[in-house]
Image (cartoon, rainbow, N blue to C red; front, top):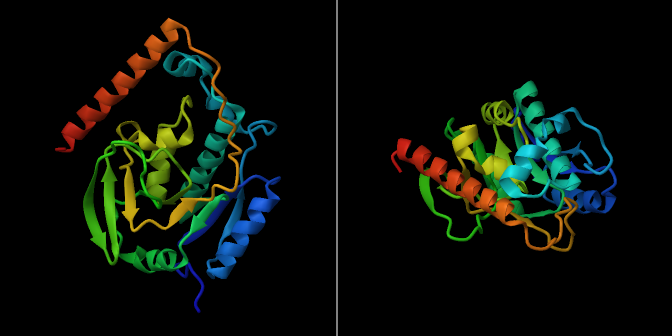
Length: 252
């Protein structure tokens, strides 16, 4: 069987932390069994690593919008994906990015590689998993072979697996500063980064729930003060309004 991908300008990266050897062993076996060539990409551990991109974090803006700081794990996750976007742009190479705790459907994954040459140029970032957010709306914007390309009005709130072009990477990089939201939420803000929020059907990436998150979301810390709750609601209303206006411009 031929190995995938066999397109020279497409690379599969698996984002992992150096200490996550159990995750690395599991996904390496899965991708090797599927005959999919890949490279590990060493991520930023926000609890102990220093990375230049972490200087973009604006805690005051974070507190005004959400009422609590980002966790070290969230910051490290953002920095890790940011560095992947830099690699994509610098090398001018399309990427399939997988986090190390995903499960893949081998056959659909290989069909995806076979269909890539026919993908429209306007597809700059494509989530490879099912959008399970509540009350999300989607519309079909293209069909390529066995795949439907879906546009999401409300993003899937995950970065576990996505296809990225250098053009999409440059747009993500351009508007990433300041950092005050988790990376998946930032990727969903197409009205800010101008990268259409797209998905694919059938999806072929899912989360392996046997692994606990290494991002480190904080537990509930009690009810926030009234002014923090007010600021958070104002921010969310502003986000919905900006999304609505942006979509009006697209005729949706």
